[in-house]
Image (cartoon, rainbow, N blue to C red; front, side, top):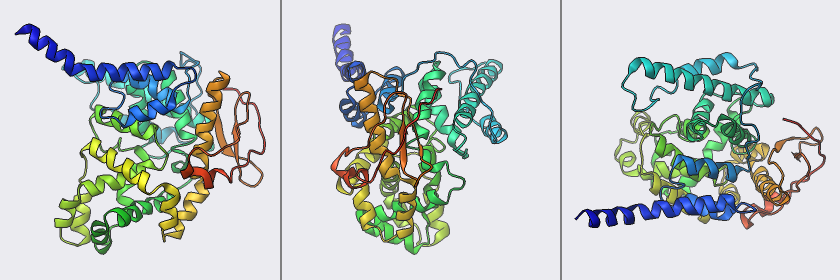
Length: 384
């Protein structure tokens, strides 16, 4: 009987071990096998554990931790006080499995100190970005996943704020609120009955703002679930979080449709969405993305203000350049320390690296039209 049980355990754990092996192999390839990593991110359970995720996340965003210490990191910026207040309200669920309350408080305060340094270091490094409440939740997921390697967590976050999260870090949230309208546009295409119910009830897409700007880190308490979502979103287009948000609403369609078509009732149900079938939502979002890519979604949208907001944010242009930079830096064997910003001439995108300037090219047929508009106009060498 013990032998049979042991055999069953080996079979049960075999898929996980295979996933770990495939992920590490893709990360260790020269160049990194990004295509395989993206495919693995779509598989149930994603990259499987924190150790594997740390490697995969670094590879997916083209980050390499060249500093193994946080000593000497500049953390001074204008929003330090707000960061301090938000950090003090965070991480109440950590550390896990620590029955000694006094010791748990000491460990929690240590985690908060690390989190504060990471968040502040971002805005000290990039004064053009503006802190928003909830950003610390994103950083905390990266910090907890990288475990004790805060330097690696910082490199991942630096890459995210220059691409995936950049448009949420403007002076105000107006562009983000306009972008959120595409969640309802997508629902009109994929679930018109539910979309009509929401519109008749007067529901505005602002209900999803926290989902989008924190990648659900403000709503979901379970770290494993958050890490799974981050696997998917890190391996995807920056606008994928809009598809995921629409998929989450769609997943709760029965409850929402049964609610009286009145603002208070529908809104009460929609803001209570905290837990959902993550793997199902991921697969739905991916399917919808393939059926209606961002370029097609914009074409179908009658919400011209949302289209203008996306064009101004240039998320469509930035991602192909981001991906191409990862590819070129891997091939050149150089450190992935790239900064994305507007040039002073014409608001065109400039990609600046230590040794190379990457012209954004077509990543997929989806991004072809947007990528064709990118001109690389100048370059400079920055040091960390």
